[in-house]
Length: 259
Image (cartoon, rainbow, N blue to C red):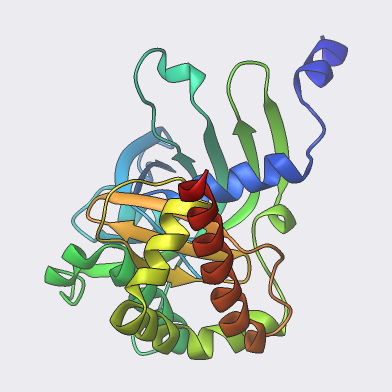
């Protein structure tokens, strides 16, 4: 039995990590599983999702929801991400994260950054995010399992999903100004990122977040993930990378139009 189980799990490679990060960064919602304080039974519910700049999931929840006091009583939880399409829902990739939930303190730098990123991703949540009974929880991934479709199962560690190092704080310090600048002055470039690099269609794309690995783009309820050619080493690399990606995407588009 153990040998058969090992055969089912594939060796985690760069492609699997990229798929897992795509599912994580592009998720609009997920299924959160917690433990009921009274019974210890599993309790699952749907929650809106965003990610912190390092990749940890963020959720905004009310104290009136059963899962909130459950996380305060026992921080162990699990988050399932991934959306099915037409046909067999089990043929579509999904990611299950084993996490420890932590409630972010209002007024802290961590809360301010998390709230900013959550509202950039879920702007309609601004209607209730400031209410006293709502809190932002950061879900610290401990490990994860990725099912990329039939016969494509992988196990991932925290290090496969969460970015660490000085670059995280360095990039976070200028992220919002960069997002606002791109969305105010360079929506033509953002459209190139969405259409050329993510293969997305439609108009109205804007940047919701930037991180070491890439960017999250939104257009209404649609979300797409665009990766940089290489992870950033310093925040100073962000601007030239964005410029070069826009240039390369436009050049490729012109070449396709000429053929």
